[in-house]
Length: 154
Image 1 (cartoon, rainbow, N blue to C red):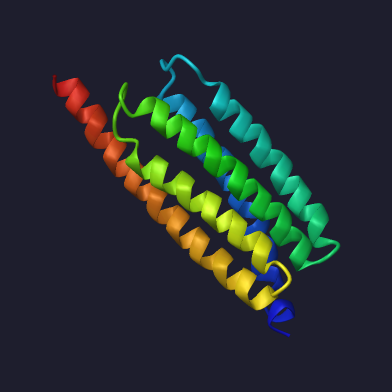
Image 2: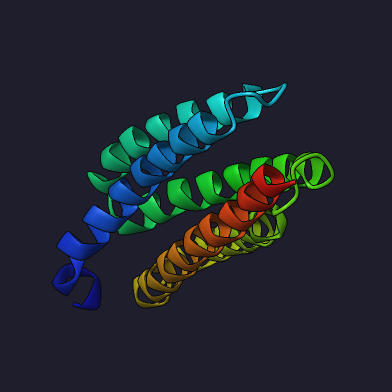
């Protein structure tokens, strides 16, 4: 009953979140256009587009299947964020939100997969994940803007 009641919300969130991540990745690419390696970001963008499509297809089978696809995406992109954040932390600074977000994504992805067949728990976890994701985006924007302002002032 719960899963059916919130199916529209769940569907939208499961598809929009990876698409939103793609947008964030392109904004990050634009802001860091002089960085040496952009491959992880391009890989992340492709993964996000494919995930949005795969989640849409998985939703035709059920919410549990979509949560499993979403969980796999969260793990994979979390690992990419961790690697990218760790590589960038010394060169441009301001990467702790990305590192924390990557770690949280890996843990959340595992949780989505484990709880996929308990829709109430999986959907509740999804809402929390989205809220933390928004928080990390804001924190990253704030931290990177301070880093950029400091670099300009120096």
